[in-house]
Amino acid sequence: MGDLELHSDSAVKQILLAMNEKESFIIDDLDDNHVVIKADEEWRVRRELEAELEKNTYSLE
Image (cartoon, rainbow, N blue to C red; front, side):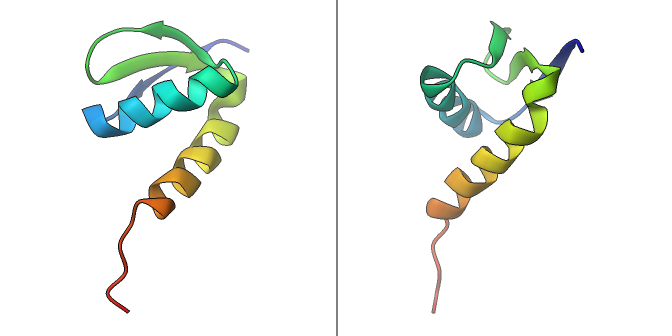
């Protein structure tokens, strides 16, 4: 299918790198804010990243 460049802040990139250790999807680590991933992994990566970010969200309830 191809490759996809993702742009994120450095904190999110660190989460992506940790996720990549479990199941490889990063093709190239470009700089502090950009990585290239396998395009066919985009939705899985987005779902897992969203779940990871939810774990790190604080609730005022």
